[in-house]
Amino acid sequence: MRGNKVRFLFTLPRFEKDTNPPQGISYIAAVLRNAGHHVEILDPTFKGFGYAKKGLIEKDYDVLGISTYTKNHEAGLLMAKIAKEHHPSCIVVFGGVHPTILSEETIKDDLVDIVVIGEGEETLLELAERLEKKKELKGVKGILYKKNKKVFRNPPRPLIENLDALPFPARDLLPMHEYLNAKLGRAAWAVRQPATSMVSSRGCPFRCTYCSSHLIFGRRVRFRSPQNIIDEIKFLKKEYGLKGLTFVDDTFTLNKKLVTEFCGLLLKEKIKVDWVCNGRVDTVSKEMLRLMKKAGCKVIAFGVESGNQRILDDILHKDITLERVERAFRWCREVGIKTDAYFMLGIPGETLADMKQSIRFAKKIKADVANFAVTNPLPKTELYDIAKKYGKITARRYSDFDYMKRSVFVSDTLNPRLIEKMQRQANRRFYLNIGYVWRQLFSIRSLSDLRNKFNGFLMVLKRQ
Ligand code: B12
Ligand code: SF4
Image (cartoon, rainbow, N blue to C red):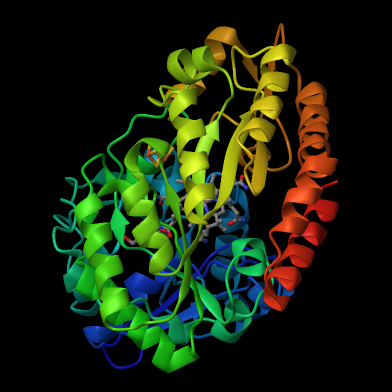
């Protein structure tokens, strides 16, 4: 502590390049800073573990906030260990998806002092005020904490109603120049750089069994106003010369009225930005897609997940039909928006034939890019329980839940080797076929198209 000021340091256990700045801790940092608190972010995304370790040892902080998913939770605990060894009196706070869904287990760890459940902005603000005034944590909504080694669970905190009231994320505390020009993901093949990401809503009303999103933000969706999003885009253009933007919302296309208003504002104010977003095939119309295209939308990523209607209905509760998928992809092609299709392989209940059907379907809908993830039923999702009915989850540690790399599910019809083999085969069949290559070459309109295609091609090679 300096005077009575508590110094906060936020971090995340991510040690490899990425295009998406950590929005969660950046929002919290902005809120704390606006209220006059001292905040820093240690983001090791581009510099790796050695940089994180050095920062944890050398920096001055009283409270360390660590954000974790399931996959990187153990790495987060390792960071907490380093911090406690060198700053024994620091308070370690865990937040994010994993601590939220497994809060009781997370707080039991000796390295963890406080767990924040769900959205962190208001909770951290209240926590900061209590800590500065050396008050008790009793009554701070949305936390579990320890006192004399005993765990206390406070009542839950209601979700933030007005997202427009939040400040923009504290991007200035992040290595933004690295993020803005990281030639990765959609920023590499779909939009011009400098590029970054943004969140325009929180929550998703759908019930896909494999998804953890509602566990953080609930099923009721809260939207930022189109004007508030436009203000952030203008700010990013002024500050960083932004040319490309990814909306990381669960389903950007959910509210037709707001999307229409947002596109209208982009066009009215002549704001030139390439943007990409996530959509659901049942939330788009051709008219809406046409307007989105006019307003700068380059790519929509759709979760298709399976080419088998039974799997979509009975296992994933995806509530979409294969006809609607085909139609949405066709509409995108017709209006000139590129498509990014997400598939899951090795879904509990699937057979080899079902996986092959998904690969064929990916080719049939003529997506511009397809991602084939291995299915990892995540803890506390419905799919986790469904998976146990069909077979066995073999994960020994949380880091095994990495759905780009490893399968953790075995059944009579599936095993990790087969699923991983099918993932490689899916990438080969989808990308390395004459129809696909021809379509892609035929769609080159400019030098930047050619550069983006080349970057995309390198990404595919890396996956093999
Ligand atoms: C954008 C995104 C990504 C981006 C960027 C992630 C990032 N670091 O920002 C990319 C593409 C890189 C990504 C990767 C992965 N992701 Co992701 N991702 C998302 C997505 C769509 C939005 C995240 C976001 O920015 N939300 C907006 C911000 C404001 O919310 P937030 O981060 O949750 O933060 C709030 C609270 O959680 C809390 N909070 C967060 N951190 C902290 C820390 C402290 C100390 C406190 C107090 C509070 C707190 O307060 C924040 C503000 O209210 C979510 C879905 C979703 N709806 O959240 C999935 C999601 C988080 N991802 C998920 C997964 C599984 C992954 C991967 C592990 C997938 C994989 N490859 O296996 C990888 C992880 C890679 C890695 N090493 O980091 C799962 C997590 C489920 C789980 N149980 O782990 C989610 C929930 C989607 C799903 N499938 O259900 N992801
Ligand atoms: S639509 Fe996307 S975010 Fe919503 S429940 Fe399904 S997978 Fe999760």
